[in-house]
Image (tube, rainbow, N blue to C red; front, side):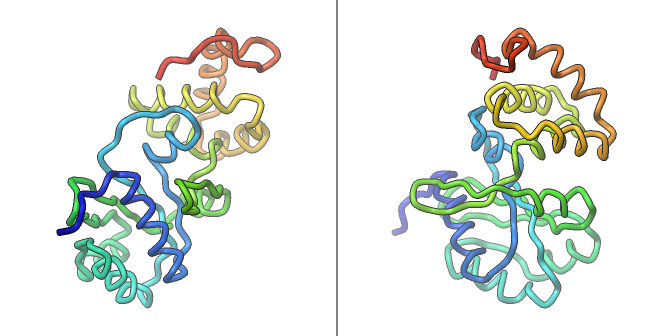
Length: 199
């Protein structure tokens, strides 16, 4: 009997599989938020992938061979309709919510992704600038908290020009300005953290 996998196990196995079959990807969503210091619980792994129709058969086969359940028909349909598809883990309650790089926003995510390590496994995640900008774009209360947490915890390490340019491109430059004003109580004028940001 296979041991039950944690969500970190699922993320690591996903990274191993995609490296083996040479598919470009970036982990986004809650796992990416946690990678940049704003730890929070999540029940899925959000993934942006560069997946062509010619890659689908080996992609599905690779995941099925490692304890995941995914439908080739669902993947092909999602790519055609430019929507999400789901990969279920047979050894845990967690799942992977994946989508192709359909628009400039996803292509930018792949272009600026960063390499991090979960234990000894190399994973590619969305950059902190990308996380902040896209969270501001999505705009839910949780998304705004995520953006604030990453902003404060990465202060001094962020590429502010890249962040502003991305926010301008996504139409959320005003939201970034308001976030910076709210977070000034934590970062101070010199950009160094002063207090623990809210999670």
